[in-house]
Amino acid sequence: MISKDKNPVILDFGIAKVDMQEAYPLDNILKNRPIGTKIYSSPEQLLGKPVDNTTDLYASSVTFYSLMTNQNHDQISQLIDSNKRIILKEHRLISKDTLSVLKKSVAYNPTDRWRDARSFKNALFNVYYKNWLQKIITIKNEADRF
Image (tube, rainbow, N blue to C red; front, top):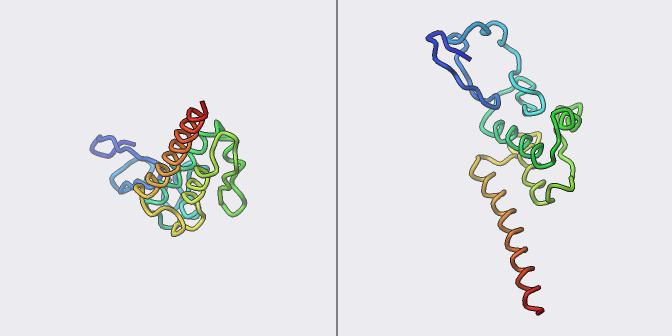
């Protein structure tokens, strides 16, 4: 988007806000309408309710799930129920621990999600560190057998 003074404005997952009086020509078109791609938008965003940083974590988690499971936009859109909840399903390409972290990120109620990016990152790190450590122990145990 370009502001009236010809400066580019970068919008991200939908939580970034622009003073619509400073942008054009969409200022009247976008009023009172949810902005964003449905599958990446949190329920509160789709319902036109206030959003916070958990909205970006929601979108990031849907993107992460899509990339990890190799599912396209149409496949991911099938996971949204009639209440605007996305239901992440078990998949052979994603661990149950990782799925658990992502499910918390896409909880219907924002207060049930990770409160900030640091908490989300730490949870993912713990999952991958635990998996890495288990692999090292398995390799060591196998080596000890010889």
